[in-house]
Structure formats: C-alpha cells, structure tokens
Length: 286
Image 1 (tube, rainbow, N blue to C red):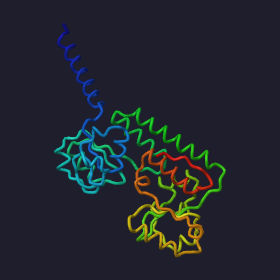
Image 2: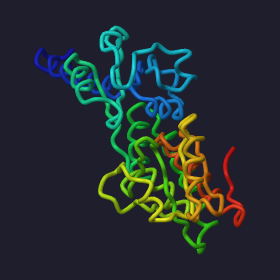
Image 3: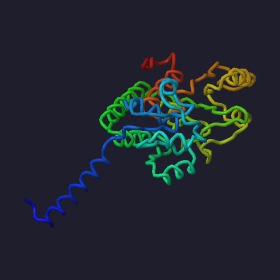
Image 4: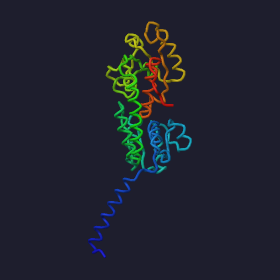
C-alpha cells in the first residue's frame, strides 16, 4: 500500500499522462471550413471523421455531412452545436475573425497555411496528416506525388521552355506571379510564366500587356460561359504566337485551385502534356 504522499504523487503523474494521451489522440469529430481542407481530409482517408463542411465543399461530402454555411460566413452557432474536437480552417479562404471567435469559445482550430510551392504544400499536408493520425498515409501520398512530378521532369528535360500566359480572371483580367503554387504548375511542366516578374501574387493586367509579352500558349482556367467568350476574345489578336498556332487551352479549375500534393502532380502532368504534345508523350494518371 502506498503512503499518503506517495499515493498523491502517483495520482498526479497518472492524471498528467492521461491528459497528454487524451490530447494526443486523433480527433474523431472534425469540421472543415474550406473545400481544399475537405479534399485533403478525404484524400487522407479521414472522411469518416468529418461531421460538417461548407456549401462549397465537394459533393461527396455535402451529401452526407452537416452544412455549416459558406467559407467566408460559416454558422458559428451550428459549429458549436456539433461539438467538434477539431475545426480546420484555411488561411487563404477563411477570415481571421472566424478563427478567433471559435477559439474564444474554447474550440480547437487548426489553420492550414498559405502555399506558394510544392514544398509548402507537402509540409502542410504532412502536418495535417500527423495531427489527425494519418501521418503514414500523408507521407505515402507525398512520395507518390513527388515521383509523378519527377517523371514529368525526366520526360521534358532538355526541351525548349514554353512561354505561358495563365488567366485566372477575365473581367478585370488577372493572372499569377512567381510566388504562387499555380506558377509551379507552369515551371515544373516546362513553362515560363510571362508575368512571373510582377510584385503582386495575383496582379491585374491589361490585354495590351499580354499582347506585348506575346506568349507561346494561353491557359484559361474554367470559368463557365466566360471561358467561351474569352477564347473568342483572344482569337481576335491574330498576331500573337499563341493565337497563330491555335494554342489557347481551357483547364478545369478543380485541379488548379486545390493545393494538395496529388492535385499538383496531376496538374503538372496535364500542363506538360499540353505544352509539349504532340512532341512528347507525357504519362498522365486517369
């Protein structure tokens, strides 16, 4: 039998270790505040732990999970009522006030960072995997994605780089600079961003500036009916290399707006296939 003091000491140690273990246990009720976060969670095999998502999250999640409003205006009262043990937000998508409010209410919030390149994306993905008890799955996905990107590099190595204009907004006209993960699609796929030198990450530009820089290729991210109008609009600039060669391509935004290792690898494969086909057969996943 323990003496009184020893018993108290033992109970304190037991309590501390129990608290640490409880804190370290993977979350069982997760709420996602952004589409990219939801995709990460499902990619990691944690979809069964997700209890609620936003109205903009993937259909597979919206069909079976509770809705908690939009990315910019989530329903705080609904979130609290669902008793989550973890809420995951996006620094680029969610407002700081939302995160601060949830934390003041005693809710644990993890914020996914801003990602400018593949290394940032992998680090954030690995951190998320570790947090939710899926570290091994995260590392496997990162390794597979890195191998796919390396295969593209080996295929296009030694080929002449292709200059690219990447349009992300039509009215007004927007593009990306070198400090964006979208720019990495271009560079790793063998492209050169004609507006990579601009100081703003998502600069507003004019059509005259695009014409002046005369890209080999124009990439339009899917914008519904706007995409069709944009294709016709650029077609009027018959002196541009991209127009003369018929190299105006439309890309699905589902890949190029989600910063995950898999999306980046898939996007690089697709862009490389467009930049170098039919010169080179780029292997892409189905």
